Length: 48
Image (cartoon, rainbow, N blue to C red; front, side):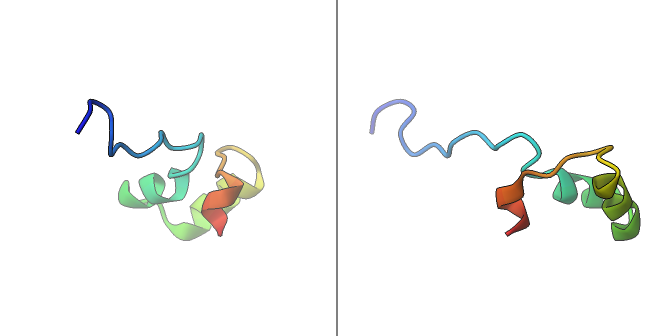
């Protein structure tokens, strides 16, 4: 195995926004409001 093989690509900017904010205890309603007002961003691919 060569160095660097088997690595995952770096996450896209905003890819884990919802996950991280949820882990810090922010309610979904607050996260949704921040997303709607573009206070935070979520990568489109992560939204499914």
